[in-house]
Length: 377
Image (tube, rainbow, N blue to C red; front, side, top):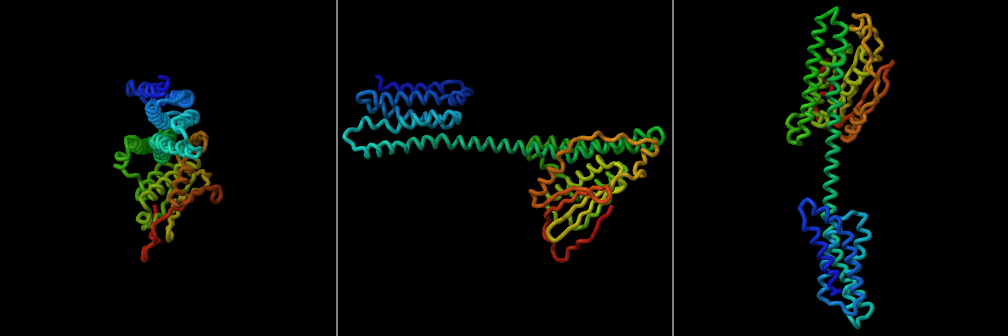
């Protein structure tokens, strides 16, 4: 009866793991490391402690231990595998040795080695789904991280641009409302338009949360929408923006590169509005080459007093925006441009101005394609 104890213990452990509610099965399967180690110890004791163990019980015991090995490999913690699997593998490998007599040492080693194959198969049977589960979890985590990054980029690139425009228009309306109500009405109209744009961007972001199918319904803006962006930027503040957009640029940029180009221009204009709101002039220039398109966004120093008509008419300056820590816009756009095979840099320009330069890959220039046809605003 003692020879049957390991088999009964192993069978009882497996029954205990699965004889419960479905929601608790996985939790119990993860606790089989200790029962497997105990059953392995009992197997070794009965194999070498009894005078001659029953072959039938030992074979059933080896089969049940192999099932435990597979279950432990699949469900137990990694820290538990180090002390649960070796004794179980040893018990399965050595169980035939007490039953064979008259065999040489080398033959005994061969018998024991042959039982390593079932042990390896049981470990593989548990390790493969475990590895697939880990890969699935890692893929889900990476997808969630990418989605969060995309959400932060959309909110930063589009919503922040519209909100900063609202702030500028609200400040201008506050100072001219008493002296020039007509300008205040125009500012309110621009505030309404910027608010609607911000709501549209947020709606697109929310739809993206519901899945890639709904996110793909509305494409992201590209360079074809830059003229309207430049026009709205000029109307919303004291900075006069100009756009130099050669004709073939839109056709040569891929859809993703065009979206990145639009985001770069939005980021550049938003930074101008935040850090140099009284700059008299800003320029957005696209320069195509044989295999790339260069984007340069430059602005003056912003020290010209004539650049603040609202403040001048009211006799005082609009309150400066509270200084904040650097955002994620330029680092994120730099990574995005580099992922496309391009580059992005920013630094001082001229006498106190600033310049943002980006180079994006483009389709090769075909013979006869014009490179100098410009669209200027």
